[in-house]
Length: 229
Image 1: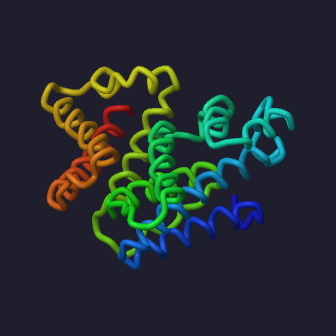
Image 2: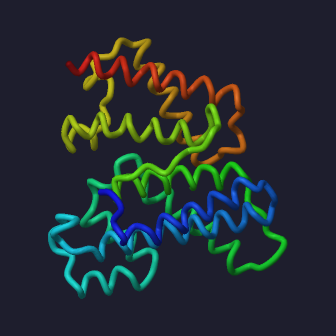
C-alpha cells in the first residue's frame, strides 16, 4: 500500500510518540508510551474498519466491528480472530501488557515513570504492526543496534517461518524445520530466550548483549534461508 489516506492518522500518532521518545526526559517517556499505545489502538481500529476489498478480511460485519471497538480487549480479540496473518512478529499478549502500563501512566497522575527501554520495546512492536497492516516501514533512525533493530529483524525471522505454513509456525519446532545441529539449535534457543527477556525485562539487557544477539540473529536468518532451499 502506498499513500493511502486511511493510514495517515496512525502514522502521525506513531511518529509523534517516537518524537517524544527521542527527547529522553521522564515526561517524554511517559508521553511517548501513551501516544504509541494510542497509535497501536488506532492502527487496529482503522484496519478492521477498512472495506473488505482492501483488507480481504472475511466476516468483519458492522456489528462485529462495533463490538470490537468498544474496548481494547475486544479489539485485541477481534484482531486475533480475523487478522491473525497480520500479526507476524507481534504478540498480542505483550501489547495488552504494555497497554496496562499505559493505563497506569494515564490514570494514576503525576509521579509515575516508565523505563526508556519499555517505551523503545513497545515502539518497536508498534512499527512492526504498522508495517504488517499498512505495508510501510517507519524509519528506525540512525541508531546502529538497538531494541528496534533486534525486534524488527526478529519479525523478519518469524515471516520466514510463516512462509513454511501456519502449522509449522504454531509448533515452533525450529530444529526440525531448519535441520539444525545441536550447537545451532542451542544458539537459536539463546536468541529466543533473549527476545523474551528483551520484551519483558528490557532493563536487564546490556548494550553488549543486544549487539551480540542482533548479529547472531542476522547470521541465523541467512543460515535458515540456505537450509530451506
